[in-house]
Image 1 (cartoon, rainbow, N blue to C red):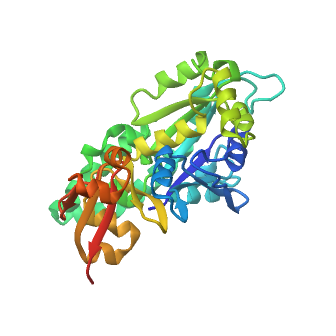
Image 2 (image 1 turned 60 degrees about the horizontal axis):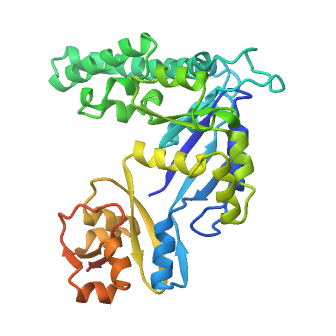
Length: 365
């Protein structure tokens, strides 16, 4: 399953710097380069040390990591919800992504002029929030007009939907995002069907100066307090520092550079981990002499669903899954040795796949 994250933000907040840093990044698992599809779309493979471990044990012909697609979404201006500027393009693009990365300026620099003349992360957040909320209200109002007619006829399902829609409408009109209401309010997935923009999973990236990358600063603290009630993650990073990190080809040199700032990993890595956590994603592996490969699935998926990511025939004709824990694979050194040690389990259709499982599927179609 492909993962697509849209990068949004006002002018001069560091959005382009971050995207350019991503475009130059060298994944740690191997030299899997960033690929530009269009000027504002690119794919970067996800660094995962477990791939290196399996590569050393299996010695495959190739290693295939999983990947994230980043979209540098067109700029936003006030009035975008009404089609101002590139508003329609912006809103159409953001509707398609799995998660939003909202870059917010949390640094002062007299050489980089802020669009509103001063650093104000709450105001910056509010501009984009307002435009997305207005667009969501427009979608809800149109849906209410259709559902009301059916509800008046006595249709119980329509009345239930109308009640839910009105709750969301009131919430949005109060200046709050749909995601802060929580999923329990909408068991019928009405909001999911509407694809409300403010219901999208979001990561706020507080772009701080290099000196504050470890601890954050007053601006990032203000932002963290502001989003406390939202179902959202926050990552503190420095886009300018990420640009420097991305220049390193040698992993040892890169790690030495990170150590100088007291960092164990780059902001890019933390951003990817945050996206996986936010979207409840995990990784399982297939390992053979032809290839070692990482596969992204949703946490809680059962073995047939996981097999379907490889090919729909695998899910349709699923018979069983052979599963080895990565730690056991490391300890015993091979699939055969794991099997002899009783560390290869045979699992059926109800098996819930775990992060890091090494799997081989048997199927018949």
